[in-house]
Image 1 (cartoon, rainbow over the protein chains, first blue to last red):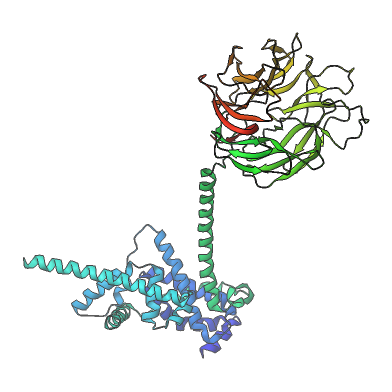
Image 2 (image 1 turned 90 degrees about the vertical axis):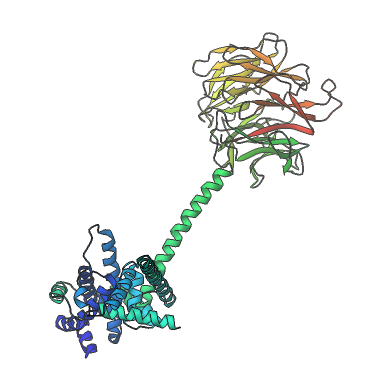
Length: 185
Length: 435
């Protein structure tokens, strides 16, 4: 079904591409907002990714690889959006994600906030590696294709990201222990 | 392993909690509106068409890194070049004025040597099968021109780098050549005087030694040379003006009944001949560093050789010495305030006193030191010392065959010269380095 839509879209059928976009846009936005942590930037990245996908669709040799190919385009758009984010001096609100947070126990929320703080400090390339590997469950080779880097680089980015996150969590834990000790005294 | 699993689970939980299945309102419509206005590109205009899609991104990824490495490498290479060039003295000195003293090129026993600034640490630079000598550093200190005896008893003018490499012949088959080779200030040209051995216009037996000598200009960069001034011009001791536009030289005439030798100017191509002084015997010119005056030798009343200065603009001549002895080889100090010259004490030219003329007041000072030969004195590039050459027994010219010592005269405070014994020393040239 998807293959048929892709082939029609490659021949210039905008309705077919509209159907493909409707199928994909939720997934693309999900990935973009996870990587960017900013709903407005995520929207920009998704919109640009869809436009580029349409523009260059005729170059896709294997229609069955459409999803991976579009994800790769999205990652490039996410990097560009992140660059724009760094250039902007105004602080954007980190909204949009709060609506999606599921009810949790207070402890789980606290843990998630720690992860969240660590994740936000990562560079976009490291965030993207974490998302495609841990969230999409892609292997190193698959992640390499989506991220457009060698598989070895995917591993090193994951290691660096994990180490940075762990350091953030450890720092938080030490701070919490210190506060608890002072409270007891 | 457990820690890794925990980390994976933590990240997955985090992403699942943060993920959303809802798409923002209006996003699809906005994107499709733009898509509706966008034309698809032909496949061949995208990199994905030419390369497997994974390769396309990898190419860009590697390309960026290669570009970064190339730029960084280039910057490092430029910095290293600057450090190496700056640290190794390759910064070139100006052609005039004070400079830092470098090495001394010496003619010792018919070979070319390089010594440090106090005459020590001598290393052989060039040793041809016959006599080699008259080594002369270029004003920028990077090249040495010298004469080299050949199998056919002729002399060749050769050029090499200051380290002795890159030797090349500039002029071949010369005879009766000058002892001084003049460099142009840009270190590209040389001028000398010699009798070409292939010149057949002189009938056999009619040759007058030292008279039918021609002015030769050589292009060191191109390795070419030519006689200048046409078939009727003969002369000796050509010297480049500081601006490189003129040659001063002593003009002579082949026929003994012609006018006496005198000082002339011409352009380096032999045109624009102009007599600077009609004093007989005029020659051995030395340009002041500013190019406005020329020190030269000419005959005095008692037919000895005296020292004169002439203004290049108006030919005004001023006499500076008037002794019964022969003066020889005036050489300007690098700063243009003094002229070193020699006063011969005997007719053999091997017992002379080193003198300094203060150009501003005309005062002549005899430097303290041994008698030297009548070879051109050499100023140190910083103007502090003058080199002369000592015969072992100057009153008995038949007893020695070469100079025996280098005399380093102090040109600043008049203290006694320092003698450095060097058997076979003939003359020398001091390298200029950037200050």
